[in-house]
Length: 326
Image (cartoon, rainbow, N blue to C red; front, side, top):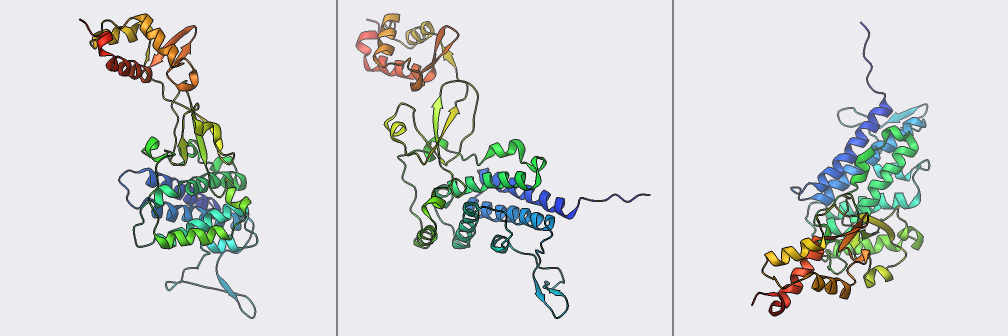
């Protein structure tokens, strides 16, 4: 009976690497997980370490610790006799490391950050460094495909890219992040001081996105890295060029014809609110400007979203004497 051969050592390393990366993201996105940042960093550390082990094995580079004896190598071993393999930082230090500078800086930053937050909870770490985590995920997807082919891609899972909850609140440009512990603030200052401006601004070190909403179609996913602003706002006009501009398609929403808007106001106790009042209102607010997100043109017909319905309701409530029954 023929023996069934298992996966090669390289393939086994890649499978473990890929699984660690997926677990890192799933853990970070789990609302029941408390120590998200530390867990994410540990799992991505493992993912990158196995990926580089697979690369070094492919290239015939020894990635076990050893000492040079008089005639042959003497490999370092654990107490139980197993070989000691390079940790991630040692993999990065090797001159044959295939990763570009900003990607290496990203990993070194996360390794150091994990050491700083180890054994004690640090408020704000998960939210504050989302851009670094995001870059780490995209860097991983890029290199696993470049080094080993598309068959090892995370596929649709790469679109995950850290779906942080509380999107609109966390991404608000006006929300102040929680202050960092002094030890972590010092670590960041010292680490960044050693990097060039080019490396600091590299998307492979830290990702920053501006999501500008458009008013069509299908659902999309986002994360805390974004500052979510309206396309017609002053912030959108003055945003710094270091941000990447990305269009976010909003979830398909209920639509209302103008006559339905008027009828709803009648049902809510404003029988004197007529179609011409509605026309005057939307014209005064330039509400058919698609950038404002109040509605959408479908074919030759304009439909209003619930967001506009709320504006009409607010208007009627502010002018009760005009629209209520006598």
